[in-house]
Image (tube, helix red, strand yellow):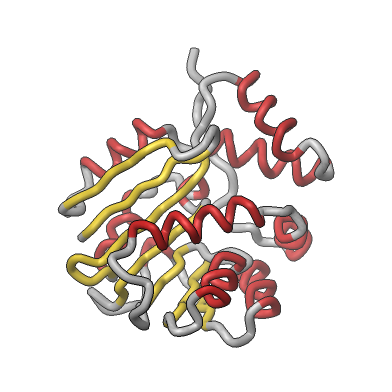
Length: 218
């Protein structure tokens, strides 16, 4: 029997939980995200307007700013605790408290919309996906990456051991809960396919043993 989806809280509410997440080493994962994003963009030389939805601790925007200081980077997240950490790491960047399901931006405001590890926090990701597309300019790039729920509990436990085996029990539980809450590639593809206004072009693929990635154009 396939592993069922078990939701986790939408927001990391406490400073302790946010700090535990921030202490986990996602350098390799974040580096891959930034490199894979750059590979699908038509250009990285222009001053692109980039929105990171569910920015969390802001580490990806921090890395993008180091690589592309001419980009206009904005992060939005619903967790004040995570945003406090993001602002501490990158005080020069713009971070906004807000809900992915009702983004406080005009339509077609951004050239690029990115999101990493947000979708598994959402009971129904469709409203947030629709909002990401709404604020993306025509022919802009949507780049989403998240965990992929394993087929079995044994596979989940193996992933936790492989990637969080040296972390604290609390951090291991955070990772396990996230894997339980994640969508499968098929579930994510079905969501995109059934959006009221689906993207003109999109591709959803498995990009690691624990991640899927969506690249789309409005």
